[in-house]
Length: 283
Ligand SMILES: C[S@@+](CC[C@H](N)C(=O)[O-])C[C@H]1O[C@@H](n2cnc3c(N)ncnc32)[C@H](O)[C@@H]1O
Image (cartoon, rainbow, N blue to C red; front, side):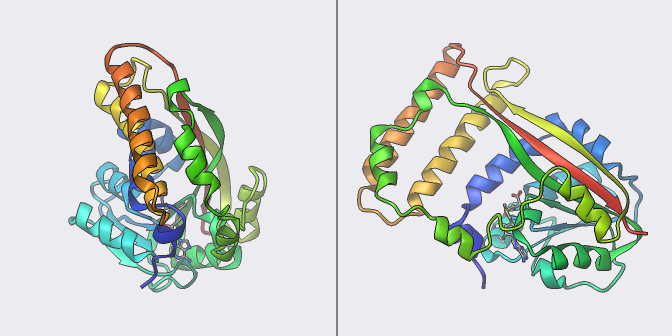
């Protein structure tokens, strides 16, 4: 049983809610153009490092004729994904030793995983399980734009709370988090070096701005609530006797943000992610 990521790095709901927005149908046309997947009824798609399964869900919905499998080594993520999406297939497994025979999939895809796995295993295992002509899609988050609303700035209670905690840097290094970062030039180059052909790269811009009237109220509220959930999950992951006070402060600031949204007072705070999509084919 491996729960390294969900216990120490990112909580289940933090990843699930942020990815649910990132892979929302509103943004699908951008991904579709970059993925260039021709759907047919025997299509087999594997998502490696699927976390709580939000992208796996989107892929299954967008390619309904395909068989889509999500794989992650974190038992908590897989248990959550299975509960959330009982109609989909999720497996516990290691990207460095994929539990599949050679030439098994038409597409292998990952989102924000390449940064954390030894490249020798990451690329070679995908090549091994892809059929000839199969597509590797490697999604990686780039520096985006984050403009916080004044009412969402860190509260004094949060500052005191976080100042008391260790920095967490050692933990990140211990679990190899972000150890294999690649630049926008290095990522497609790595694909070529490992033998992929017809390599392309492109970017999806995921603009989360709750006040933009393009977004219906339920989506705008989901953007605010995803951030609330992430802040609360981070606090709850720390054993600290002053939890209750800081949780109250965090809830109060998000309640205030929501109330302003409901009152139609625009703050134009935003969270814009830039998602790099590197695409290569197996010869
Ligand atoms: C940043 S998270 C991304 C999760 C998911 N793709 C998403 O966007 O929500 C990285 C994921 O990779 C998984 N992971 C890291 N190394 C792995 C390995 N060797 N085998 C399987 N999963 C791995 C972690 O458990 C975690 O779920």
